[in-house]
Amino acid sequence: MTDLSEAIAMLNEFIVRYDNIVFFGGAGVSTESGIPDFRSVDGLYHQQYDYPPETILSHSFYRSKPEEFYRFYRNKMLFTDAKPNAAHLKLAMLERAGKLKAVITQNIDGLHQAAGSKTVLELHGSVLRNYCEDCGCFYDVRYIMESTGVPRCAKCGGPVKPDVVLYEEGLNDKTLRDAINYIHNAQLLIIGGTSLAVYPAAGLIDYFKGEKIVVINKSATPRDGIADLLIQAPIGEVFSKIDM
Image (cartoon, rainbow, N blue to C red; front, side, top):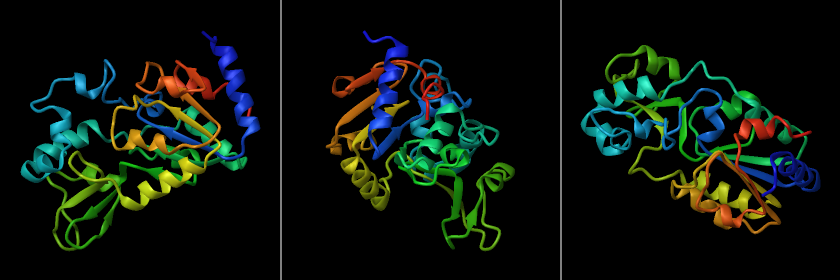
C-alpha cells in the first residue's frame, strides 16, 4: 500500500506531466467546508426526519408537500456561510495555470466558483439560483432563506423553485454533453470526494479514454479498481500538499 506522502508525490508527477486534466467531484469535496454529505455515517441519510431525505428531495414530494419541502430545504440544504477549502482553492489554481480544463461536480453549493474556478459543470444544479416557475424571474439564495412557506415571485406571485435537480428529475442535457466531452478528451481524470454511487452522474467516468485515473476518497468506492492511483484520505488534506 502506497503511503500518503508517496501517493501525493505521484499525484504531483501526474499534474506536472499532463496539461488536460479534468476533476470529477462530489459531496466529500465540501464536507471540509462544513457542508454535510448524504451517505456518510454522519450524513443526512442517517438522521431522523418525518420523511427520508431522498423522499423530501424528490420532484413528487416538492409538488405534493411544498411547504414541508421548503422547511427541510432551508434547514438542511443551505449553507451560505460556507467557505472554499484547500481542495476548491487548489483546483482553481490549477485552472489558472492552464492544467485543469473543467470541474465537473455533483455539488450544489457554488464553492468551486467562490474559489475562483471558471469552467464548472454543475450536474445537479445550484442552490444559488432560483426561478419563478411561471414567469422565469431569477432569485438568489437570500430570497429563499428570507421567505416563509413556499417562496413566491415578487412580480407575478408564482412559486419559486431552486435550480437543483431533484430525485425523479433528469440532468440537464447540455451539461451532460459537455461533461462527457471534457472527460472523453482528458489525459488525466481526478475523481475526488465522491462515493460514485449516484447515477447517472457516476457513469460519466466511463467515457474517459485518457492516460491516468486518480481516485481520492476517505472510504472505498465501487470503482477503486480502475484507479491508476488510489488515495484514501480527506481530499482537502491531499490537495493542500500539491505543489502547484
